[in-house]
Image (cartoon, rainbow over all chains, first blue to last red; front, side, top):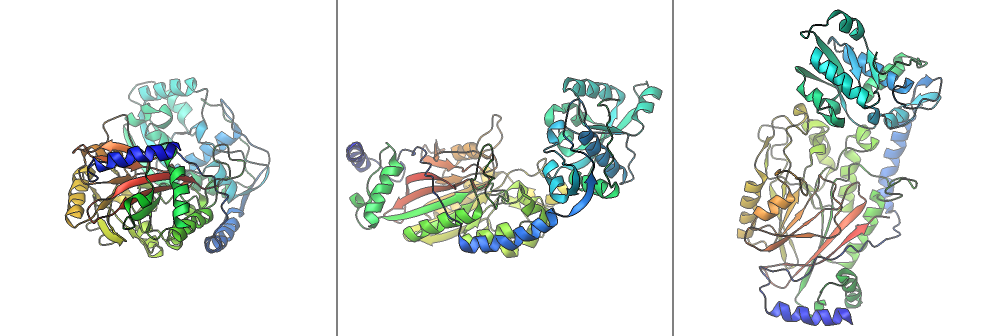
Length: 229
Length: 300
């Protein structure tokens, strides 16, 4: 009844307005029709071989993890492993690197004890983020310290950062930080990293760094590094 | 049966708003059903049943069923995508987007535009997958000159469906700063508003009674950054913008007054193939088409 009444009003309004310049339909409200849709057979059949092929790739065992690993603050074995693997991948380019900082939020899953599959690495690191090397001043380093502390710790690994901080108190000292491009772009409020003196985008995916490390370290060494030093 | 169904549909569509039954306009009135997606990001399979936000939603095989059902019901159907087809599940990591394009071809997509993530495999990665797409990619504001995409992406296309002469074109977001340079190197970004107005004017001149812009600019920003809303306000010949990039879940096409004070619409379906947007137009002449109604169809 209501609809009928409105239709009449509508008809009147249509006759009096120019269709070319005015839409006569009010934008409709959301009709979220819940269809109990079945799968289209042709499309399902197309997906099957790809899914199978991927399952095979995803189930490939690349290493062994001796314990169940979970991300924690201020630091965790899982975070330390990811930072160490990323640091090593960055070092493999021949660039000089001092330490690696990743973001806690970037660890997306847990690592179960037992065989490590490619699929699990995708779960820990589903993003396509790439490894970036930044050059930071001593002053920027100090600011970064504060940011990390405020966040309650982040995944971290180092080479010769401690001795450098001990030996080079002068502000002229510079440090090479390995991180992901997301943080280097200021993600997770790391605005400080956007002011780096130099930036090298390695083009190496973090995930590929993890895979390389797991393959080279079998079983996975369980190293816990405190978040700062 | 058709008419009865239509009235049922119309009352559903109307949901309390004004909507006139078809027969009041006579038999010569023609209907176009536009179906669209954006940012489906390689979500070939539905989300897991225990997914916190979108349990068991999405999935290409069910989208295909829905598209087929609508095609059985209506003669004039367009199926469009606003970009970011790639990246988001291991399907992309493993197969580089091959399956995404094959499935869209099977579903009968007519046109798509390019999103920033469609360059995640580089220009080479995209060029490699293009043979798997039997539909056309449209973009008018990227200059592909001297890249491997030169000649492979058209700025616009015109398609006739019943009484509708539809002009479709695409606009993309600034890639610099969003996509690593080595992946899109050589592509020049041009002002989407200027280009969109030029292309839309040309399409109108060519006699299109419905002009659709496939956009990957994003729905709206807090800053002055160009978006679908900005484009809509500054446009004069576009009738409908089907957007993407911001993963905005709109329940219905948003009306915006263009620079001539004419109401045009923007729609976006969210992301991950969770929804299929549907926007219906009607016309009874060669010059104009009017929005008839819309639904946001949840794939579940």
